[in-house]
Every structure is written in C-alpha cells, then in structure tokens.
Image (cartoon, rainbow, N blue to C red; front, top):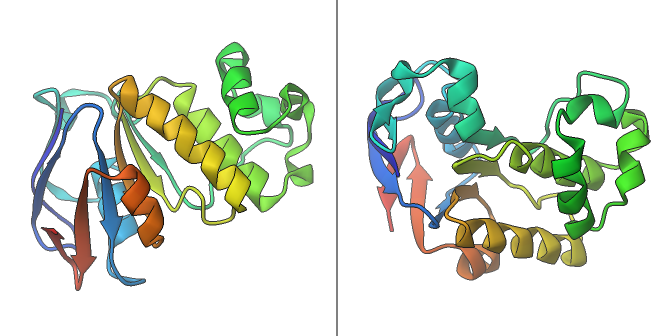
Length: 196
C-alpha cells in the first residue's frame, strides 16, 4: 500500500520500507533521533527527497491536500486554529461515533477549545484525522498524554481501523504498546531507519 524508497531529509539518511494495508508498524528510538521527522517527511510536511507512493501512485502526482487526506499525520500536540471544537470537524456525523468510542461526549463539539485538557485534545485530534477516512495514519505518540483507560480505548479504535485495512505507522516509546499493536518495528537512531 505505502512504499517508501530512499526517503531522506537534512536529518534522515535515505530510508526505505513498506506499510501494507491493515498493518501497524511501530517506530521507536531515542528522543531526537528523527522519528517525528520521518512521519512528517512521509506526510510531505517537511522538505524531503525520495520516492513515496500510495497504491503505486507517487505523492507528487496528487495535490498536497489530497495526499494528506489519504496519508494523515497526527502530531503529539495538534494545532487548533479556531475557538470552538466544531469548527475543526467538517463531518460531525462521522466524528461523533469516534468520539464516543474514545470516551468523549457528543456535546464536546460545542465546547471552546480552551476548555479541553491535553488528553481531550489528543483524542479529538485522532478523531479529526479518522473522520477524513485516511488510508494511512501517521501517529506521533497518540497516547502520550492519556491515562490507561483512554489509552485502551485508542488502541481498540486503532485495531478496528487496522481491521478495515488502514495502515498505521505509530511512534511510541511504550514497548508494551508496540507489543500490543505492531506487526513490525522500525528503529530510528542517528538519522538511520532500519527494520528490527
């Protein structure tokens, strides 16, 4: 589904790997090694060179917004550009079931963003990404600010997405989370990406 050949940035040495439909690959390594840089490069958010394809189609052959709808990056701390939550959700009917699956009430769409806790923002950012119907999710520490119960809800939702054929590339420092979700692992260290 997603193939990456010779992808490099100022930080990353050329990296090559694949992500199949319904597969989760954990990205691990020390802080500052380039894990987030890798995800941002795949999403075409930072300058990079290399060949990145989705179902054989090069990302350069799609508009940037179309690529990012299909190959969606969710940072550890997402941006919020409007004062109210609902302004960030063009498809609220798609968002509500996902919110409820993550333990968030439907009325959270009516809340001001300033009311949200860090964990609520993190879960809503995942909902925002999933409501676009991506083929690939690029997740940067998606449960870093969550308690055990909320983490379990996120993992359950991700398993459902994997079962639907979504590919997931997840940066996580939690070895047990990688054990629970990932089919394979990539190690990023010193700008090098290798399969382990």
